[in-house]
Length: 279
View 1 (spheres, rainbow, N blue to C red):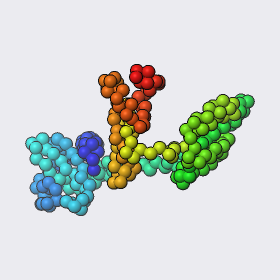
View 2: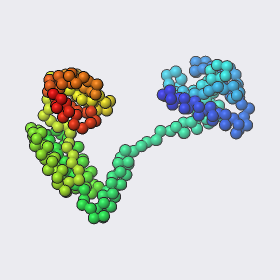
View 3: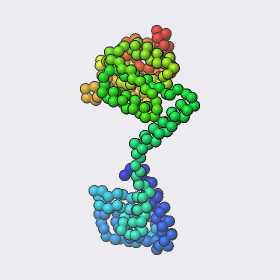
View 4: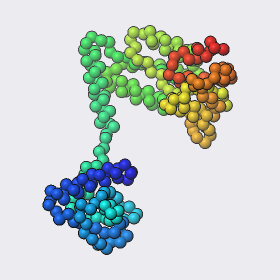
């Protein structure tokens, strides 16, 4: 059990002990033993007023039953008898309160799908064109084809039209950009999806400059590219240089001129244009 969970249980358990002792008008005493099942001899009956804190330890190698450890105000630690009616009642209340809840991803997905489906119906009822998704799929990666099939199926389920544009793995970047531009100008198209990863960019032994060092984009990309592909797949086996706002302009110029690949993840538009003009 994690320390944070134990602390939460300790505070809750102490509060319940005090409340139950008051509500039942108990004598304030409970059978206690020496700490940790190692000695089962009853040593005393302790008063609730002498308890400083409590914690629950689940069954484990050290003990076959749940332990309720009480730290007294004098610093002594004792194990409350788990068979005592009051202690058993407290343990059950705590376990019930912190019982795990199963969150069904399938049910949540169905609910989201239902909401989107209703939203599409309402959109069309207002006289708008049915949403249309254009998907560009490059190469023959089996996983990518599976993902795209599932996306087309999901779109159909909520009433969204879709079309699939297949291109071979050796398609040029210029052709892909032309296709994207044409789809952007098509009034029928509501959304464009380019399925990743795109094939054809070799990173093995290349010099790569990553512009940006954010923990969400820049750093993960740099780590992926420089990783040993033979032992830590996926790995790019590239020589990576990370540039950022404080990289000296002259050094930046040298690195980018030597780079085979430049990846811009700076969160700012036209960064490469500024660099290029600075040469």
